[in-house]
Every structure is written in C-alpha cells, then in structure tokens.
Image (cartoon, rainbow, N blue to C red; front, side):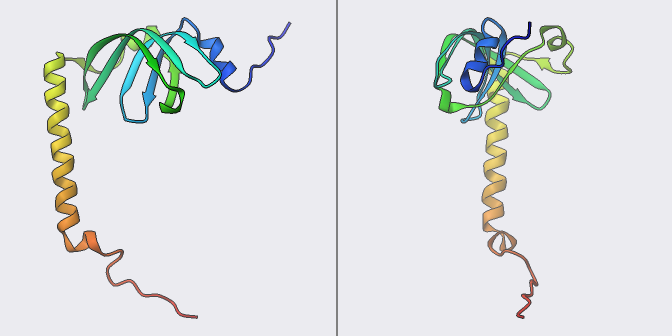
Length: 133
C-alpha cells in the first residue's frame, strides 16, 4: 500500500535520524543528524558541525547537540553520504578557514564602502530618459 503523504512540518518526520544540511537565516550552515522536530519546525540536531566555506576550502567546527528554531531555517536537505566524499573541496583547519572568512568579509565590506562612495553608486541609471506620454 502507498504511504500517506504528510503535509507541512509533519513531512520532516520522514527525515528523522538522517544526516541533514541546514542553512540558517544568518548564513550559517549546519550539518547533523535530525533527532526531533515539532509542529513549528524547530529542530534538534545531533553530532552537529558548523561548516564554513570560502572558495573551494571548508572547515568544520564541532557543535554537538544543536537546537534550531524553525523560523531561522532557510533550507534543509538530506546529505547523500556516498557523494559527500566526492566533492571537490579541500578541508582546512578551523583557524585557517576562520581567517579566510574574515578576510573575505573585509574585502566585501571594502568593496561595498567604495561602491557607496562612487558617483555611479548614488544614481539609478546614467543618462536615463523618461518617456512622458
């Protein structure tokens, strides 16, 4: 017989005890085993790591048991453990990846600062003409 289709957050019950990647609103990426979920999509992850990506490098920070409020989840998906090892990413130490992340954020901030100071950053479109019909 066909299994009944679950709706809403009940659909997450199919993901219990599976390894998931969870992307949060603040940009953090968590990877862990889903142990519990409630009607608000609050999650309990076990053996959780926070993965930080910079370019083709990544570093993992162990977090243990992690409780995630449902409203902070942007994306959630099961990880294929067989394909996970085939990714073209290089694992580096936590200190190295945090340093690379800090440098990347500083470059973005500097670029944004320069863009906001430039004349083009202050106007919508140069030489724009409006059609008055």
